[in-house]
Length: 204
Image 1: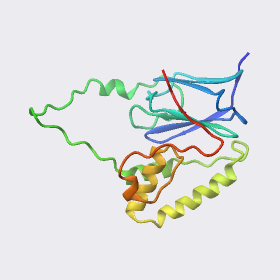
Image 2 (image 1 turned 180 degrees about the vertical axis):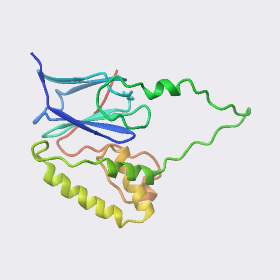
Image 3 (image 1 turned 90 degrees about the vertical axis):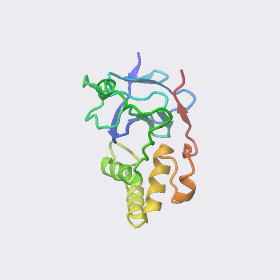
Image 4 (image 1 turned 120 degrees about the vertical axis):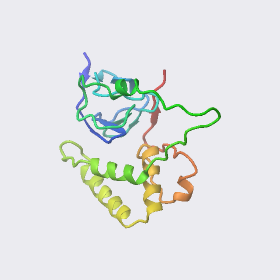
């Protein structure tokens, strides 16, 4: 019989981070199946099936990282906004947006692509962090100290450094942090999991 694993989550407007407390999980044995409204975590006789998700996710952009104490499942939301919960039958925001037609443009013209406001993304992520107790997360002391250090570093940085820090942190799934905006602005930042962990993306 499969054993349900303890888990918790927190969210930003763009992502929902599901933490699965599976100590000593073998990255080669962990399997996570992403679907638009559900997530299935499996590791041997341990499993966690979260459905229906309260909002829709992008399975191809979602990923997970296996650590020594826990597994972080990063769900990329299909539409920005807070869910206010992990599961539920709340209306999917994509259902409403699907009926809105794109504005007509003249032949031979294209609409300018919107640039992401990294200052707003930065503020959203910092405000969304919530404190955890040592009972919930054995690494809470070290993580809290590290978060405080980065927040102090961020508050004293100039605008380009702030944008570089948040762009690299978000696009790498929290595995990389850079203060060099000239380098980071050239393209997407790749995921670089820590030693002993393996970043794996959903595959059909």
